Length: 272
Ligand SMILES: Nc1ncnc(NCCc2cnc(NC(=O)Nc3cccc(C(F)(F)F)c3)s2)c1Br
Image (tube, rainbow, N blue to C red):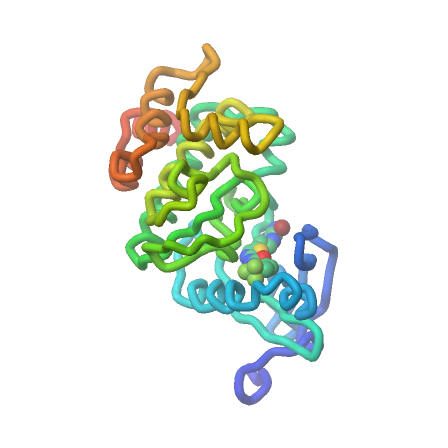
């Protein structure tokens, strides 16, 4: 199709639809490329906000990383463009929105559904880690749901190439951070495996395992690593979560073993 020579898009190439969500640095809109007609999610960022937060390098890294990621359980970034004041990320549209919303609506998810979701995220993370990319910000808000109910790992705004001693000024929830990051130590891809354990727990229980009303107590609980399971959590689920939430990064269950863990296999069989 005859889009602009040099391949660059501009806002006039799109019809803008309803807002899909509001982020810290800008909003996401449903949008349709006019020619050919193609539905996307358009994240619109203000250069001024990125500059004052000094995160332009982070966005550049995300764009670079996303350009090389193509996987059914990783939300695609098709392209990006900019004008005088804004930067536009042209993203794959996830029809069923954020996993966070589904968890809020349902309170907590069944073991069958959770096992399927964790299998898909382990698959996505295994793919990213093979490309030396660690996501570093896995949480229900950053996981979207596609048209067939499949999960899409999204928002690589905090991702880096492993290993990283980057002492990024972390903001947002500490709940998903492993001991090594909470203590500002060098960290590798094992941080995503820890976060997968927190995610498994949160989907089954409805809240993360070390949640506290203040950060210092959360940090203490993350470092202590004691996990309380409600009675209704099966032994196999407890086994997987315990093997993911190991304090020592190298002791955490490798992703390939997560995908064949008895709890995953048993629940995937049942849902066929
Ligand atoms: N239904 C939906 N279907 C598709 N997408 C949806 N929402 C957008 C999900 C995203 C994917 N990728 C993202 N990336 C960033 O936001 N990056 C970003 C933003 C600011 C600053 C920075 C940085 F500069 F700090 F790195 C990096 S947001 C929804 Br709701």
